[in-house]
Amino acid sequence: MGVRVGIVGCGGISRSHVEGYKAEGAEVAALTDADPGAAEKLSQELGGAAVYSDYRKLVDEGKPDVISICSPPVAHEEAAVYALGRGVHVLCEKPMAFDVASAHRMRDAAKKSKALLMPAFRHRFLPAIAALRGLVASGEIGDVVFFNNVFCGPMPGMERTWFTKKAVAGGGSLLDTNSHSVDLFRFIVGEIVDQKAVMHRHFKTTDVEDAGILSVKAANGAVGAMESSFVAGRGLAFIHVMGTKGLATYSYGDGQVRYQLTDDAEPKVQSVDESWGFAEEIRHFLGAVRGEHTLAVTVEDGVRAMEVICSVYEG
Image 1 (spheres, helix red, strand yellow):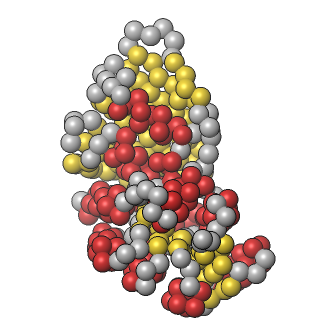
Image 2 (spheres, rainbow, N blue to C red):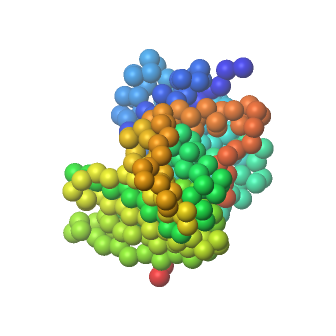
C-alpha cells in the first residue's frame, strides 16, 4: 500500500525529508507553510503536490497517512497534536517542542492516539553512531569516563533568522543543536541525572545564546561535555568517548570510527558508510508505521532532550 505524506513547513530541512520519502517510494502529496510562497516553490519542485493554507486543511483535506513537521519549534505542538488526534503518524523535527510543557502535551497526545509520534533524531541512524554504541556496549573501551561532542561552525546571517529568536525557537544553539547531543549521550552512554551549562550571546540583536557548553552526568557515573555554536570560525563535528580501557572517536565525514586501547601502539579503524541519516531515519519511521518494528526513537527521547536542555535555561 502506498503511503501519502504531508510536509508541514517547507524550508530547507524539508527537502531532506522529501528525498527520504521519495527514496522509500512514498508520495509527497500535501504541503503547507506559513509562507505560501515556500510551499508553492516546493510544490513546483515536486511536480504539483497540493498546497494547503494550514496544517488543519492539510490533514483533513489532503488525507496524508504521515506528516513530517519541519516548521520552527513554536509551531510543532499544534500540528502534531492535531494530526495525532486524527490518526495521522508524525515525524517531528528537533527540538521536539518549544518548551517542556509543550513537549509534555505532545507526549500526552501520542499516548491517546493510535498513530505514532517520532522525534527526528537522525544521528542515531548513522552507521558511525551504531559503531560507537557497539564499542561501548561490548565493553571494548571499558566503562565510559568522558563523552565529548562538538557541533559548531560559522553560520553567516543566523542573527537574522528565526533560529535566534526565543519566541520562535525556544532557545539558541543549545536547544537547536545540542538536542542531538543529548540524545546521542543517552543513546550511547546512558540516562542523564544531572546537567549544567555555560553560554554566551555574541550577536547583539538576538535574545538567545549562540555558543554554549552543556555538561551532563549519567546514572552510571559517566560525564559529558557538549559544545555548540552558531559563530565559531571553523566547522567542527565530532564525538569522543573515553573509557577506562581506551578511546573511541568519530569525526563526521571522515568515514572511520577509530579506537585505541590503553596498550595499543596504533588505533584500530572501522570503516563506516557516510550518511546524513535522513534516509535511514525515514525508512525506520515508515517501517514502524507499517508495523514491521517498534520505534527506535520514542516520544520520551524527545521529551528528555527538552527537559535536560530547558532546565539549564532556568538556572
